[in-house]
Image 1 (cartoon, rainbow, N blue to C red):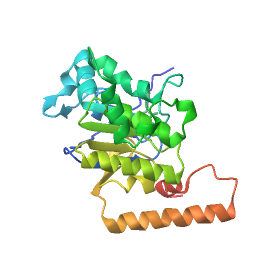
Image 2: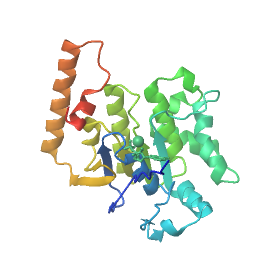
Image 3: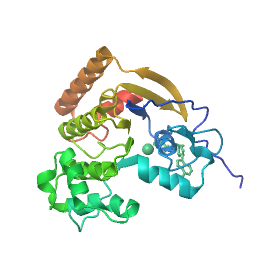
Image 4: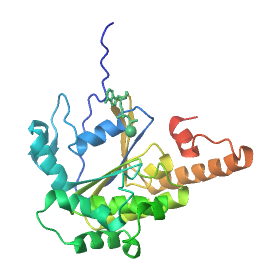
Length: 249
Ligand SMILES: Nc1ncnc2c1ncn2[C@@H]1O[C@H](COP(=O)(O)OP(=O)(O)O)[C@@H](O)[C@H]1O
Ligand SMILES: [Mg+2]
């Protein structure tokens, strides 16, 4: 059998400015997560150069990459990835254990307060809603004061209202100086960033500032599609309207 090589990304040229709120969108398999892993120094490209705050990370070894990640990058995922048997506060303490010889739980408490979860610090994930769990994950991602927050489909498991709240939190964090990169296949989520790149087959096919007209247009289209779906096929929706919009269906 011949070997096949999948080119996950090709010819990508991207600069993200400090303090930006950027969304990366595109169909499943278009390379969004691969690109996010490279931006977040989780992976190095097989060819090409990657710079992070003026340092050539594509030439770094695993240990150096891990150091950059621990100090400068926070990650949020679709499935929260929390430890279920322990409290929100303990979950947020985890990154501190890796990066500091001694740490104060106050630091973790402050991170929880920043995402509006101060009063829930002693609750376990099993006692929280999906939106609250994602907030705990965001608090964990920012507890080391990263300059960059990367979120891969963070609203994928959440309803529309809760998704809105999560996006609001990202805006607040960005206002506090964190650069936010949000990966999503949902157009109504993607247009809430300031700049949006669209990927297809491992390439960036669009890179544009999201102007208010486009945001309003996409949100209205999504709302209409939601309403139509609720009328026509109450129980049979397997794909969200925004995913349909994104795929042109
Ligand atoms: N570990 C892997 N091994 C081989 N191919 C992979 C791996 N991860 C991703 N790919 C391939 O790379 C492409 C981009 O994947 P990915 O970045 O996960 O896309 P997206 O996040 O947009 O769904 C796809 O064709 C996928 O099948
Ligand atoms: Mg992905």
